[in-house]
Image (cartoon, rainbow, N blue to C red; front, side):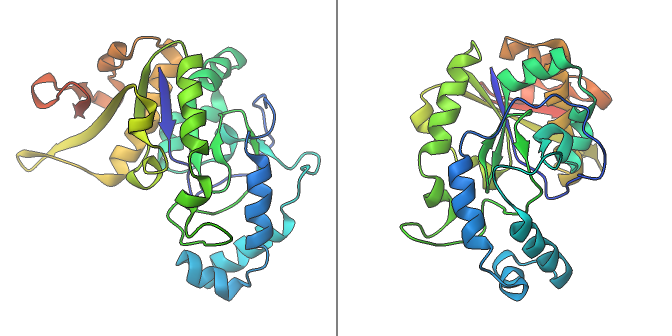
Length: 254
């Protein structure tokens, strides 16, 4: 079983890292190409490209200016220690012990606009580059074209190495589009999370993002091998609703 997640816009590089790193991302050469291109953008151009505030544009212009590989000593952090958005607040990957991180590195992948794919222990620098950003360059009109089949091929191989033939899609629509699911030729489970409000089950964005992290942590804590065991997910009062699910789309409610 392999789980895929989206990255987070929110990062934390202020605290010392306590997680073991396993090396640099597989597609670091591609990351270098992208950062070299993005380093040519002025803050005002990044603001327009990324639809962000002037403050964030200035911050990210500095990030791309400071982005160097090989990384400077002590600056890079493992992905699970760096991301801090709703998904990762539910996951709390920065708390994992080495044995749990070993499982996570075999069973979890984070999709990334800049890095393509990250393992939980892959070393990364602070950045902002959403997969849906309309960045274009030589031979590509957007990041989906830039990454082409690289991400899909990596995920396909990672599924094999995980010891299972199942992919659990906990990524957002924006990032899941970077994977050619048909080319994987495997079973794909897509968990969904809703809350009972005003007499009906409703999708609440914040809660659903957090639930993706909670489910990932549940799988890591239990060292889950069979995807069917994910139906036992019960963190923060979620429960699997068989009558509202189908073979590959599983609904969890609270």
